[in-house]
Length: 270
Image (cartoon, rainbow, N blue to C red):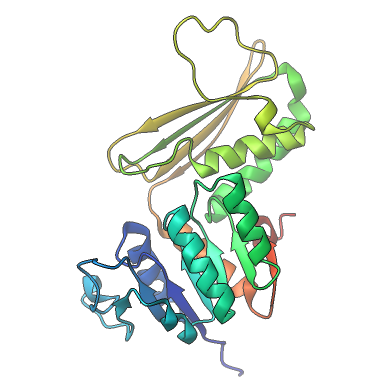
């Protein structure tokens, strides 16, 4: 029997909440190993083994020097936009693929990632969960079938430490729904309501944000019609789903030299 390939995976933000979940997932995968682990200069974890928090040894020491990417085939990055773009530059220079789960990019930053994808293969998605991406497909179908007679509201909830709002997943849900109805989200999104707002604008897509506690990630889309409403929800109880989806993205990138992909591509939902 031919042995499974071993993917040498770099992990950005290795001592953060998501980084540690990725470390654990890579260690548990038969076909992956940690090629390098990174954190910000000055982090208290620099010089420690990436799996020290588990009482294990991965053989990869957390560092800040991106030259260690030379030992990796792909870097998984769930950090912040500025950090991800710095990592992106290093990956292009060293021809290392990327899986990007970071959210909060502006239009110029997204354009930079698109340009980099001409040189390396990248999977970028605001949510790596398999369940979330199946939910996105359901939303696409519902939006197309229900049409303009149903008002659409998107409610998302995350932990108190999340710094961007609405979440990247919520925004992507809105974009998928708008596209399914032949519209652009920028033309119909409503992000704030306060005071005397007047009646709801026909065709608008509303967003509501909740932040508190340790909520991993909840998203509900409400299609409210006359006499009925439909709610499609996804609730995450663990970041494990994001980590496992990321490893599916790593495997998908094998053999690809360039291009920008998302989880629809990884899961065959296109």
